[in-house]
Picture: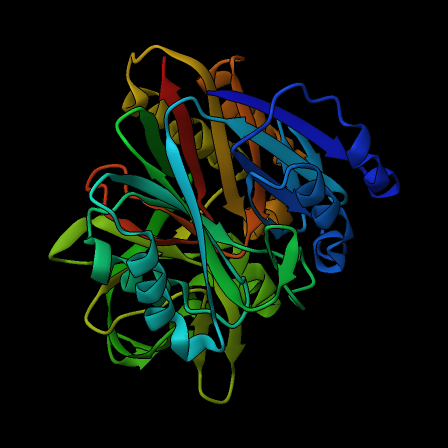
Length: 382
């Protein structure tokens, strides 16, 4: 396997034809600012130049090339496999209520006895990411190796796009399936958040809206624990996400970030389902702890990959827009931490998302995460 990366700023998107590439890729990932992906001009030009490759990408407010972050332009990742078969499949996503069936329909297309794993991209708005993952698992099983993320739009939260073979699609999900025994996939996730306060029980919820904790209005409890920080809700909620878990599967705990609050209903809406009966605990973090979380994610991925000899390695980096907004100019520190832990030979590329999808470190069951760094290492046995 070989990997090459290119970054084009917004003023140089017409230079796709001049990219110095001597080999023909099988697979192309592309991540760009919302306007670049939505226009489709640059992605279409890339598809015209490499028509035999599978092209998959999405919009984002911040793209990641190595240890550098860019808030506009286009990141292009060319991948060439020697013996790994890949397939690109997509499925429309008409509205949020179709998330589960859309995931199931995509899984049926991608399923095969030799499927090693898949990398999934979805619209970042108008989707229930938890239901989407569950739909895929309903066909492929809970141990299916799934990673990826929800497209982003930075701090605007207006529109998100998926780019499929050079064409922008606003409401869709798409995935690359990796097949055979030569491909190597490893994952790592971490948040860097610490728990505080007592463990609570979700006693009333509706989808992603949290109504009650321990039979008390959820927003009232949040305000009590946040103190003066509560006046800044929902923005201050980035500092205080919620960890939830099923007591029967404590290793599958996920982090949920606050999207909005309803002062009249005294409820909180989070970025992902909040099942009734699950346990919940508030979390908080510092820039230092978030950077350390990124380092831990990389260390886990490196250990999981093992000592298999490979010619080249790609790290698909998907982190949360909430971390980007919280850390500001210091965000590069978490990318630096990942690079240091993985080593200079690993090529890093990715984006800041509206939701991260990856297997748990311990149970390896895939789920939707928020405020989390997720890493997918991709290589091919030499």
